[in-house]
Image (cartoon, rainbow, N blue to C red; front, side, top):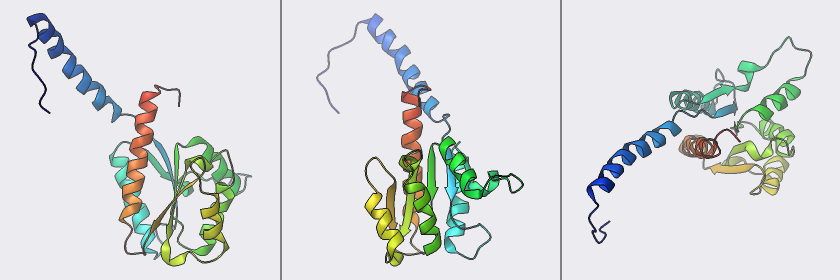
Length: 185
């Protein structure tokens, strides 16, 4: 951008020379703020193509400094609590919950959390457009609002780039808000 030039005094130029690197340093500081991300979806050893998407997403998020985990990594099978309760407790503690349901039953499971005001605003759900018939996907769409869960659609099981793209965008958005709010988030 070309602006009309008014020269700085030597003192003002010196001050600006000290400010610019500090601004750059603060912006780089943002990248050290981790976001807690809970990844729900098919087991990584299943034949679903979404299992490899989930695996790659966890790797990429961790490479970018985030605390990305699968729910099954922190569930305790020996605990006296149901898996549903353990997942609710987990969801309450993470900044973002990414759900990649691979089956109609898994889409139905998302309902447990999409209706829960304690966690639904943290929920980012990816639905396959080829599997939108039936109660579960239609009901999820109905409850998706600006203050509730977000739903993103992908065209088919082989075209899932939007899952990685949107998750990374959302993680960055949350990272920036955590920095802006300086620990109040």
